[in-house]
Image (cartoon, rainbow, N blue to C red):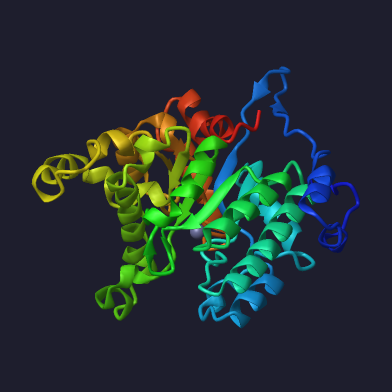
Length: 357
Ligand SMILES: [Zn+2]
């Protein structure tokens, strides 16, 4: 199933020089196309929007810049070392997943040191783009941005889209700043202008709570708490209202949000009256990936809360690998939904959102 691209190595690309030059190189990226079934009809692809790429070289770089948690991403066979891609493709085939939209989250290139942030972002995007170019039927990618440096982030966004990015990947916080910090507005303006996708992923910061971090709950409960808080910060700042073309994906079925809509709408009236709109309305315009370890009732709760057209397949590869990876797609197939609805969640919604067809 693998397919080599145009015979360009990553080194070729890294040496290719300016963004304009690399943009030209990527102009030949083949169109995705769609699978054709036995009757010649078009079948929607199964697209996993929550899948990670962790090349060792990139992890070494960000560790050198001060990241202390790269051990979480190492030795998970999620890079580009020999044998890693064939194993990934075999897993995707077993799960009947056609394509992954790659990101380097949570090891995003967010550093206070501007030069480090830019260097890491460039390496991340070059590596992500290289994978998408070498295996064009298997991968697209979300651009990594050198936050919190807005001018550099805008430049790198342009370069990354020239390399073929189909959206942007950010953490639910940028270092210690809210994702909705007023200084980031130009980044939202530009994403809105491009009518692109923003994939939000937890930073793994235990939401700055000792009660989470010190009790080994950073990913169990901290991550869905991060998902929930980030979405609400965006709504409080009016970002979904001001930037209606921006398509926001929240991870993990939206964390706690599916069961909180009425509470949010009610309590905001006295706790935060300036809320620009009812939270439930803004949340129903966002998208949600289906990463939740095969939890069918949770999937139904999220569909009921946000709408079937807002659900997009996610796996969290390589954290969900082996049987957990196949379960991440199969639990949707086995959730008792109508065939058209299953197909929409597996790929139809993402294909439309990402404008892949
Ligand atoms: Zn993830």
